[in-house]
Amino acid sequence: MEMKNIKKVLIANRGEIAVRIMRSCREMGIHTVAVFSDADRTALHVRYAGEAYHIGAAPSAESYLNIEKIIEVAKLSKSEAIHPGYGFLSENATFSRRCREEGIIFIGPSPEAIEGMGDKITARKTMIAAGVPVVPGTTEKVSTEDEALNIIAEIGLPVMIKASAGGGGKGMRLVKKESDIVSSLRAARSEAKSAFGDDSIYIEKYIESPHHIEFQVLADRFGNTVHLFERECSVQRRHQKVVEETPSPVMTPEVRKIMGDYAVAAAKAVNYEGAGTIEFIMDDNLNFYFLEMNTRLQVEHPITERVVGVDLVKEQIRIADGRALPFRQEDLHQTGHAIECRIYAEDTDNNFMPNPGTITHITEPHGLGIRCDGYVYPGYTIPIYYDPMISKLIVWDKSRQEAISRMKRALYEYKITGVKTSIKFLERIMDAVEFREGRYNTHFIENNLKYLLSDTECDMYCEDLALIATYIEHKEKIEKIEQTISPATVRHGSDWKHYGRRYGSLRL
Image (tube, rainbow, N blue to C red; front, side):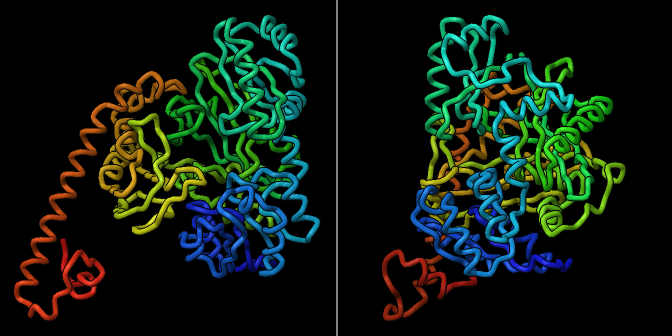
């Protein structure tokens, strides 16, 4: 669909999300501009875009977080709009404001909305004023240890200490014992200062057996705000999501309606425009409380797209272009079940350490109901400077059990060599009884870690043997062919490019 004003979009991001945004732009007839660091010169988003500009050194602070350089490239390339993706500058009010000052459309919310929901204490106050239930806790920043101790004594253990400017699990500590309070306070504040430049914290009552439920919202500038239902995000490790699904296996139609109405109310409370996510925490009795709002596109947005049938990136662009949403709440429905697995380049047997390196082979799964949002390819070297997530595997089917079976099949087909990945770990999650029965919460990985890590080393060993056997077989075929060729024409050594050109029709 052709746009009225936005003809060219700069994507201020990298990796799979940059490629994913570009795909929607291409379908809309929008020209795309990529930016890249020294580490990303050969990245897929650079190859896919219509134009690409170098913006700095590999560290994020010198490239993807360099606001003025990105603005400069947007003006140089005559881009009418900038899409920030997620992470990096996506929730940076200063960036949104600079775009406004330069007459560039920021495909996201206003700087005022980002500021209002970016500070978690301000967000709590806003939600209380809007009548949205929040977790019992502080409504002001906690500045001293004595103050924190008094508040915790009043609320009662266990509590969560959280960075006011935080996100992504940074600056967060769970405190269950009185003896851990002071050390946890100091650790949370130190981590918050390092990650966000702000060591202010707040304190919430910790919900036992918590479920992490989030609602996707969309809002245009004409007062139409809708939710696109929930996502269950309780499979987490160190507060980072690993697997997401929709609909939530614990949700009821009645609670879904109530939570959805609160999500819409939360977005309206800050005059929100664009795509955002209202995050709730829910206990086993389906009591729920507002946690925070993410003023951007979420990593797990594809499962909502698949179940609801709405391209969220396209809607973001249309809203930013001044268009009204083409649907109302009553037009939206959930169909079937979708699951997303995040594929990381990490060593699950070594405390999940990142495992950057060069991809030597990749086979992505295919078939009905499978989507793979990735950015790596054979020969690509995963940089050490960025998040180790290399792709997202999304499946859809008519029911939850069928979706789980499809995900297991897709993970089985997904082969990446050259680096260690979390694929086998994800396969074990799909097999875990608690997950299959839908009776898990945010403690799932912690409580099942021994099972989830079992047999992964054996599986990888067997896979390595299979690859070695395939390589030996291939070499034997090459040697037989060479025996029929004049010695003068044979190039000795392991010159794979030569063999590939000369015997391109050879199949393993």
